[in-house]
Amino acid sequence: MLILSSAFAAIIPMMAYLIIIWRFDRYDREPFKLVLMCYFWGAVGAIIFSLIGSFLFSGFISLFASSEQQLDHLGTIVVAPVVEEITKGIFLFVIVANRKFDNLTDGIVYGGAIGLGFGMTENFLYFISYGTTVSDWIAIVIIRTLFSAVMHCVATAIFGAFLGHAKFKGNNKFLLSLTGLAIAIFIHFAWNFSVSFQSTAVL
Image 1 (cartoon, rainbow, N blue to C red):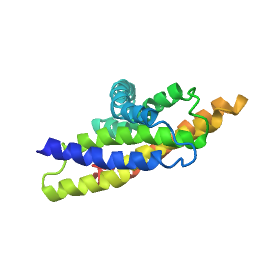
Image 2: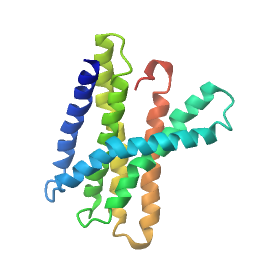
Image 3: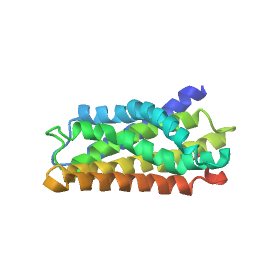
Image 4: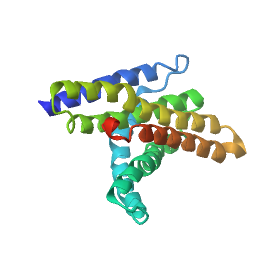
């Protein structure tokens, strides 16, 4: 029952957000099939690569951590933002060559879709792991749906916006793309740092 309820709570709100984002581009709406591909990359591909990347990066970070607690903290505020934003952004680099990806708004739609997919899977994993009572579980569902998943959406949407803007900017492509990625990582870092304390650890 918990797995079914958690799946429902993770999927339905993110699909609603996805439709809202898809309709955001009113004048040149993106192919929903491509938007769904982005969503599923975030939900599956980015999650898998993030787990691998986090394992490798954490191994490197452990060389400098003085305790298990410090390693966990660095994993939350350093490893996760860097690895997750890069792995979410990989698919944006793949589809940026698509002729339908032709402006800043398109990048917001595609990047946002990836972030929502990632947030959906992450939420599901949290929902089946936390909440010892029904009221606690409901609170976690509400908070993560309204904040954590939206953070993933916003961060990757900003990176997508920079890629869409950079596509036709000639020599500035690399700098704009790097700037977008850096902003996405910073947003993720700021969020993780703010919720890395004991009272907000499940966010």
